[in-house]
Image (cartoon, rainbow, N blue to C red; front, side, top):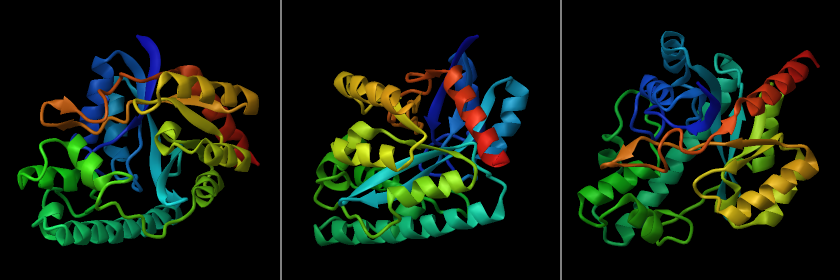
Length: 282
């Protein structure tokens, strides 16, 4: 088996389209040693993934992608080896999901102002279960259903993404608070897809604040950015991570990229494990 891991995947617990066990199966089929489950502001998919991992012989790293905001845009911080069964940690995530819900209400209201006949109720009906942790891809799907856009990418480019006509960024915790939240819980804090922010000054600030790692290998980081972030990781002794940011399928295409397409060697996870051990002993 190829001793590599995909450390950034999403499930139906947030805005992915696959059950957690399906992500584990795909990792197995891709020949990976393991994967991380990193849903947005929730750890609800981790138990089912861990159960499937036992059966399939694949390691699952319990993770989360924490939503924060700085300089008018979303900043995401990945947490690894988080205490997913801890009530206090789960309570912090509930607050973050409530903020996500408010953000989506504002976004949909703006779409309605633009003349698009979309409703919050219809968008939420796209997600099964009681934990209505939707994401912008669910809104994009509804816009496709309405014939407003042809693809998820078009929805983000024209309306939902940074610079889009309906983009909103309500007050959220800062990325520094997200880093502290993860580290205080005994986890490992890694900046997700830094190339997406187009703000390397902020990336440097967060490194100096106390990031444990940086996601060098991601579909949204180009070759020059990967080189830059690799050099910064070496300079600051950061853990280099990578992942596909797999969200399942939108139509016939994987979104963002296929699980297993962006990976790192297991040594990155071993470094995380050592850091977690020291952090929880200290």
